[in-house]
Image (cartoon, rainbow, N blue to C red; front, side):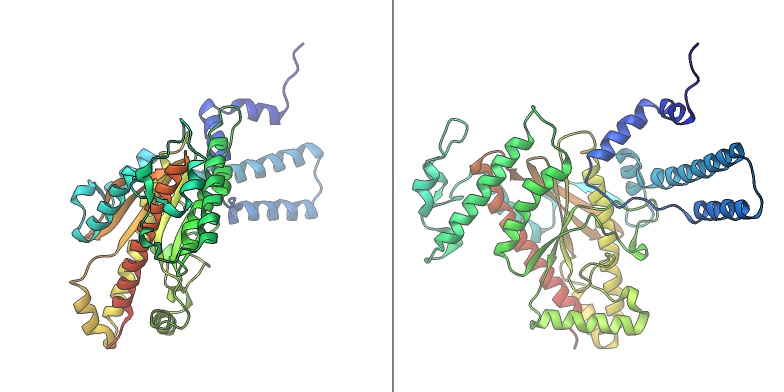
Amino acid sequence: MPRTPSPTKRRRREGTEDDNNNDEARNDATPRPTLLPTRHSSSSRDNTSSDANNQPFSAQEHVSVSRTSSQSMRSSRSSQSSRSQLSPIKRDLAMRFARDLPIQYRSISNAPDHIQPLVEQVVDLESKQGILPGCLRTTLQAYRSPSEPIRDYMFDDLQGDQGPEVDMRTLDRELERLLEIRDNTQECNSRARVFHEVEWNETVHSPMLRLVTKRITTLACRNLTQTSVSSRWANPEFQDSRINYGIFIAPDSHSDLYRSMVTYIQERRDATGAELGQINPLVDIDIDRPLAIAVETKRLATGVEKANTQLASFGRCILRFQHDITAFRADTPSASSTSKSNNSSHAFVLPLLTVIGSAWEVDFMVHEKNLAVIYGPISLGSTQTLTNCYRLYRSLGVLFQWAHQHCVEWWTAILQST
């Protein structure tokens, strides 16, 4: 006679195919903090333990109580998970028709004028004209092959923005790192084995981001998978998605901008308390550094469509925080005239950098009236070949320099006092 399966096996068999697919997608994603048991679940266990101490009961009753408690915990976790794991379509619709900062998508050709010069620079790099350092011509030509075409026009014999004195050790080190990124990309793209998102991040995405920020000493790349937006600036429609990385402005501690930031933090904490005295809306990470670029990474697999909605959701929180900063400075007597003049300046622009496997692209989020408008996307390049890596490296350098200058100018205008 067939045996009746145990309760554990019955629960496993009751799982649907969609549940299995969702589990696979969650396992592939970058590790996030696990949900903790709710207060209700904890109290249920405490009550059960208290009853056990007061009166004895049979083993069968103990199994029943334990099963009820575990089911309550699973139900509570499932409720929290369902709110935070809406489908990308539902999340996108919720943001499009939100009462506060609804999302609008527009073509990059309609972007504000102060973004267009950056767009032109990035588009010019698509031809790969002058992306390779001319002083490494002999070294780079050794890598020429049918799958790695290296043409003469790709070399910058004038050395471009590197100046007359080229640091050969720096160029050799950059070449070595780009070769590693290319090789790791090809390995992660291999059909012979499966490489998850976290491996892409460790061997391809993070090394490229940090290679660029290393040349710009006043920028810092931080992993944000373990932090979240403060509830004060979070979206009311659903729990906010975390993103993988953030590029922050890291001004010198002796600079005027940094001193202005410290003064603002002190003023805000004196007026409102510690929670609001910070330069970005994130919890417990670099409260004295403003965010310049938001980055979300995925591997090319089920779930990549979440990247854009995660960035849009996160970006709305940043715009909400920036608006709060502006409003606070406008209410400060010493900054009233400054805030009036700043109203006519450019609105804050947040680049949203999306990375899917080897492909990199960027959108730009702008606060216009009561809307969060996203312009884009623009392709920045890929990490499939060495020349593509150099093109991407140059494109990211242009983007990061632009974001740095824009962010510094915006914060300087906001924080300066009369």
